[in-house]
Each structure stands twice: as structure tokens, then as C-alpha cells.
Image 1 (cartoon, helix red, strand yellow):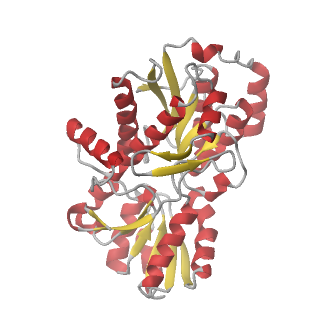
Image 2: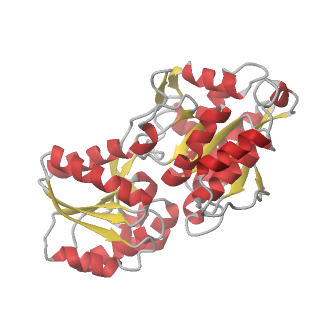
Image 3: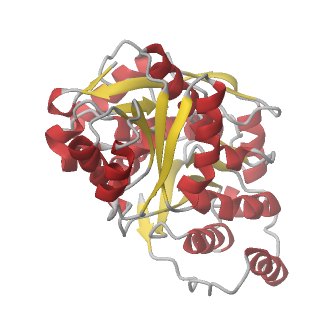
Length: 387
């Protein structure tokens, strides 16, 4: 894995994405078909991710898991005798920097594919660009349905959407007679985009929206938000929150409201569990990644062996990154001896039923969103997840 600083300047807020893309396409010639990638000793893959800022700690395990998958295939001789090398640029969770990083990776580094953008706005910023440049983006750490509405032949996801997770949460709550559900949503694009979907799912599944409350991005107003819900007596809270604000709200909820909290797979990783300690107990989390501790599949056994050799504790974060890396690797295997971005996209379309060893994906030209797997887990003693 190579981590580099972007050399493009961060664009000014007044410059529109469409204008930047137009200028880029005028200023830079198209790459010769196949030549740029066939002549490289390694298969270069590019990623823009938050290596700094508030979201950086939440991605540490995920990035580590990705790299484990690439190291594993490289130890076995790579793909068609070439190593897979991941180049990561820091975007500090800023969509403008994400787009600039992607431009640098494609136009200067000449990567074969993009991988694992982090965030809804960040991924949305690059989707028009990858369609224009015809470079595939494989995996995104966002399940926002808004990203999947418009078909994009170069965008391939590896996890269920947030809509799938919401349905699973609400059905689970309904099964235990929790019908009055409050929604706490982060006051940013992520939360605002998902709020109407959450309300729609709650109603369509036969429950009632007790109330909806915005939460500051930092979680600074977690206490008054929890207090404002207490008088309404909801049976449970669905929390549409990511990053450090998760810790603030879970603590406030325990003290001032005391009802179950359900949240998304991206919201509760190892960093959040460590910060909450025993206060995480009872937190319900929808998971779009299979349970990593019970090595009943070949995929889980492979992962557990790698984590044991690395001296790291098994967790969801590493497993999610590892699985996503494995999907990309399978796409590369089918893209030919000298793959191009186009042949890789075609390879992904042809994967059909991809079995990684007991965990399957389905891809086709009509379906580039490979998984809808979701299950509910609950944090138990010592931060362990129970199913």
C-alpha cells in the first residue's frame, strides 16, 4: 500500500463539479487504449480515503483488511505474474478533495481502477467522473440508495444498501412489539438523505414515527436531543449517525432516554466500541458483512488465519475491507493478462454468482450491486457482538 499526498490543489467552493470536469477533459488527452496499463510492472489501484480528520480512526481497520487481501494475493505470485498495488490519497472526508484525488489517480498515476471511496457525498462527487473517463469504481463505503438510483456501468458495490439495513432494523423491532420508533439523524448530507427513507420504511412496515431529531455532526448537542425525545416515550431509536457523534449520542441515550438504539453497519466499528467501552452493551447494529468470528466458511477461515498471523483481534472492520479486496481481486483475475479499465469493468459484469468461499455476490450488466446481505447483531459483554 502506498499513501501519498494529493498534488492537485483543493478546488474553491465556487467552482462547480461539472465545470472542473469539463476543463479536465479539455486539458488532458485520452490515454492510449491498453498501453498505459500493460507497460506497468504492477496493477495500480487508486483509493481516496480519510487518512486524517475525525473519520480517520473509523477507517483504520477497514484499510488494514483491504491491504491483507492484496498482500495475500501478492504472496502467491500476484495476478498474471503482476503485483496488485494500492495507492491511497488522503481526502480528510472532504468531497472536493475526493474528486481531486480521483483525478490525480486516473490522470497522473494512471490507475487501472478506483476502489473504496468513503462517504455518500464523496462517492457522489466522483460518479459522473468515472462514467466520463470509463474507469471502474469497485466498492464504496456508503450504502446510500441515492448512489444507486442512476445506473452507472462503472460503479460496482459490494455491500447491501442502507434501505436493506433499515428494513431489517424495523422488522426486528416490530418482532419484539417496538412500534413507536424515533429517528436521530446526523445534520449533514448522510443523515438528511436517509431521514425520509427511514420514515418511509418505518411506516411501510406498520410502525409509527414517534419523532425525528437532527444531531450536530460532532454530537455536541446529544444530551438535549435525547432529553427532547424522553417525553415522547418512543420504544426505540434508529440512529443515522457516523463518526465520533455515535459515542456522544449512545451515552446520552443511556442516561436520558434508556430505550434500545439501532444503527447501521458503518456506525459501529472498533474505534467506536473502544471509546464506548461497557456503554456499548445492548447497542443493536445491522451488519452488511457476515459474522467474522465463527469460522464456518472458507472465507472466514482464511480471514481468521491471516488475522492470527498478523497478531490482530478479529473484527468486522478488517473483515469488511478484506472481503472488498477479494472482490476486486476476482474482477482482476477475469480481466485478462494485460487488463484495462474497460476489460476490468467487463470482467465485473461477467462475474455472475461469485462465491468467495461460502459468501456469495451476484453481478451482471443489469445488476452491479452485488450483495443485499444484512443481519442484526447486538453488542454484548466486553464489546463482543452477539447474533
